[in-house]
Image 1: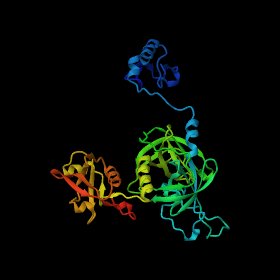
Image 2: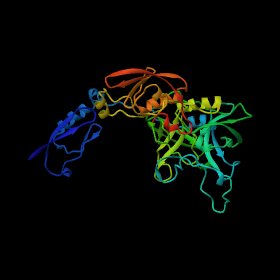
Image 3: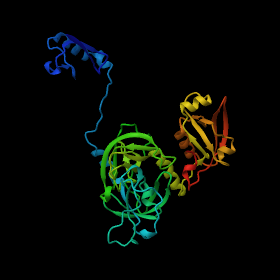
Image 4: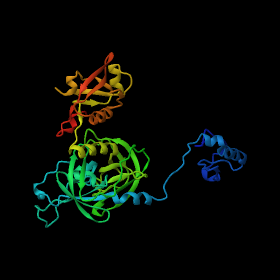
Length: 417
């Protein structure tokens, strides 16, 4: 009794049919078709069939249908590291501030506690046995220079409410830095070191990275200074629920305690993001870390440098995705847009006539793909500026003009969410 065995080859729609006995697989010799090992038995006597398939696998037509990939893996990252490492700094906060017992933590707990959710690095470290509880609370973090005259970026949760911090450069020199401003929404802070105009510095990337791109992270892990780890961009546009405006880059490079505020570089030596949090069920790095994108860093830093704080546009709505079921019920084609769940009373949207059940499809002529798109666009707009929204209501579309308010700084989740 005979049976037919079909083999599908990845190089194209090539199939082999060979008559084989119903004996166990071990009774037939192993065979290789071209560069592909065969996982099913083919009769040793059917050499002509094997040769035909081998020829077809190696044919130009077969390879023309296959995915062609050329690798650009670097032999070493040393040249990039050598070019940018001197711009990365260690940040030490809290040494000259009020005692530990009088300080308040306003941000989530440590990302290094054994919880499988995203959190940011703690304001300080656990109490040391024998050390008085009124001793200064010290934070170790990272940062990097963005100008030769001493402007540097770090995380807001590293410096918290400090007015000055201590930084250490790659050549082990120590400087005092003034905290120019902080932004709790993005978790960014801007520092300024006086007295020099020749600090090594790096530039923010102009274009977002692609998923799969190589990246390098450099930081002050565990206070050791100058630690380099490498990985790839795992995902983009991550929202971890820390803020309604989260739009993070996920990376798989190791980010450990003390590396918060440090830069993540592309292979051109440009900063694609500022490391801010990790997800870990174990307390240590498991390759799931998150960085604030360069475009967000640029927007926040420019405002901090100019006026010491950050203002964002505020529409005053609660929004949600447009599901297929909702679209069907409202007679809306597609699922793109942002559904108004509820406008806040007396907010800018409510004053302009925006209602629950409306779907915002564009802002100033730009399509609104989803709620996150709308949130980013509104936050990036200046308060007091009029904007035009295209709103779908059952049966028709309308253009509504809204004058944006200013996002309340004490409750950043109430703008659009």
